[in-house]
Image (cartoon, rainbow, N blue to C red; front, side, top):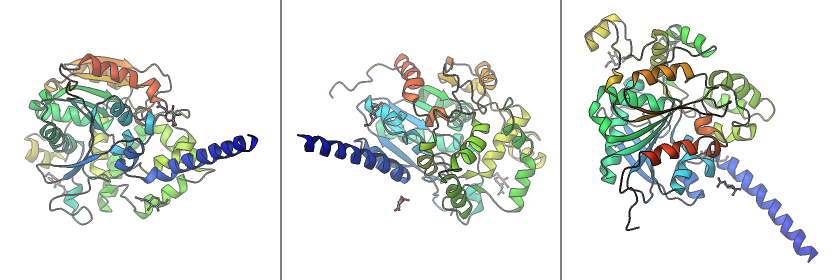
Length: 399
Ligand SMILES: *[C@@H]1O[C@H](CO)[C@@H](O)[C@H](O)[C@H]1NC(C)=O
Ligand SMILES: *[C@@H]1O[C@H](CO)[C@@H](O)[C@H](O)[C@H]1NC(C)=O
Ligand SMILES: *[C@@H]1O[C@H](CO)[C@@H](O)[C@H](O)[C@H]1NC(C)=O
């Protein structure tokens, strides 16, 4: 009897070790591999944009008829929605029977492909910003999801830049507003004029940084497996100084701090997935939006602007066109998507159905996707919105 108990305890302890170690080790798994740990089979699709980019779409099928599309934020990928495992949004939605679709923007680890441009050689590949993410990528992704599922509309959840894309698309191609039943905007990014330092300083110096990058012919930021990225990652993985150097002193001053939700144990997993690549031009476009204090097209300088837009200054995106239903969720401790800037956004969007400051005081920019207890602090509000605007016949009765 005693022996059996001892054996059992040993077994449990061993198992626990194996499980926690396998979590960390599997940090570098791809999205389908992570989903399969939770019992889900992932389908892969490609969405091809009008300008030739090939984007990877993941689908975790569910029995509900209205598909739901999740769009990641800047320097991120679809993985962000799943790396918290059974407390992640993707797995939580799948557990509730949603037909979950996860998009990836051009240039990131899953979408570094084009029908004729080579991202390693052709500089044109990297000539894009969030404008193209919205105008081309999101249009192609939505059309692919609706084509494959046969649905007329989808629900959508975006994080940060993953919300900007919807504002770009809804304003420049208004016909897409009808294809979105409701957009849940997590840490929405549209106006960036109230960001505090140090991000504010980085934005002030962005023209200089951009010129430097141009002269170095650097166009891709955080390229996969680049020496620079690998060195940074090794440094941040350091068990003693990694967390304080990379998270406490680097990430938190930009996103807002929250050590409970972004804990040290999670860092090795996070570093296998974040950051992933984007273009210098994308970062610069966000900086321009911030210092111009307007949601505007990319500023190429007067001559090219005149050519491209017919005006020497870049035109504003017309948010009056964004007629889709939008729920705005904002964190009080978010230094990127600030309470002030989201209030401006609310005034400019015609169809805001909810504007909620998340009660958790420490809620920061990263928590919305990466926080460890979002199933408690955030998801109930998301499900409230989805249920409120659920169209009829959502459940497939034959199931
Ligand atoms: C993940 O990491 C393991 C060891 O840490 C390595 O053997 C494997 O090749 C990595 N997988 C990917 C997809 O990078
Ligand atoms: C997630 O899985 C862990 C370990 O299996 C379990 O203890 C926990 O209750 C689960 N959480 C949820 C929200 O399902
Ligand atoms: C990027 O594209 C724009 C518009 O097509 C063009 O005017 C500009 O010269 C391009 N920039 C580079 C660096 O190729």
